[in-house]
Length: 203
Image (cartoon, rainbow, N blue to C red; front, side):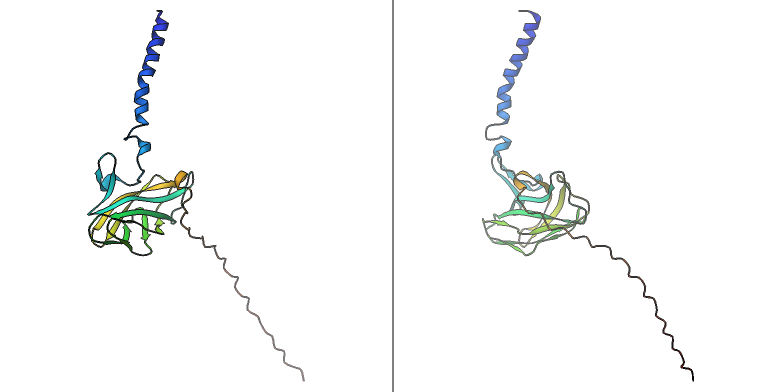
């Protein structure tokens, strides 16, 4: 076998040896494609047994939390709003309520939760029409916003909530209404005083 053929045989063997490893990355119970995507941060991860992930504290499981950002390549301007999507399960034996969501003021000015969200035991609840308002900086997608979720019984749960671009499976979700710029009003010209001249009739 020539040296060239020998090198070629080594290269082919290396490629063949790598195929099982590459296949393992895309198959099996631990494959990324087989795991449900939960856009949350590990700061509140309370269970991860390899197949089940639960996020939350004090019996509250925040199974999904994300802010819907702009379309791919776009941005939501500073001062605007973005929808906040939440999926919550109360694992406690007694009902609870999400009473509010607040920010530390670093990324957004306020968070609007239209009404308290009741949380029955072992039932999935969603927070409809919640928004983060008064963005301090433009949102591009990929950022995280620190929010605190306030519960009647479970207390406060603070976490970093990611901003997900409005694309792929999120493309059909409606964006939050944005403030309409107020047109600049031009000053009205000052009224010119009218002088009335009264002539004295001649006699």
